[in-house]
Image (cartoon, rainbow, N blue to C red):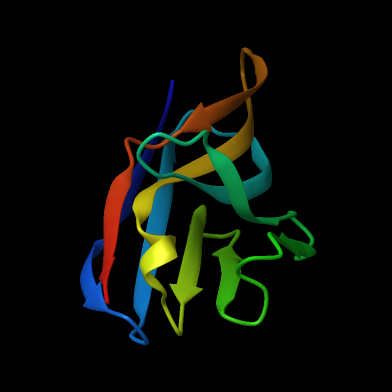
Length: 119
C-alpha cells in the first residue's frame, strides 16, 4: 500500500502565503504525475496544479502566477507554494499521486488539509 501525508495548511489573511507539502511512502516503484487538487464547500474537486516526473507543470488558470508546484523525486515529495492568496482559494487541498507499485499503477490521495484565507 501507499500513503500520502499532507502538511502545511492553516489560516492566513488575503495576500499572504502558505506552503503545502505531501510525502508518499510505502511499496513504491515509481511515481508518475503528482498533483494538488482542492474542494471548496458545495463545489466539485478541481485540479490546482500537476507536475510530471520530469518536472513539467500545469496549473489551473485561477492560480497561474501565484502558485508554484515542485517535487523531490528522491524523497517522493511534492510541494505547493501558494502566494498572494485570495479568499476564493479557501478549500480542502488534496495531494494526488499516480504510483507504480508491485501490484500495478493507480491513483492515491492524501487525507486533505484545510486552507482558509480570510478577507
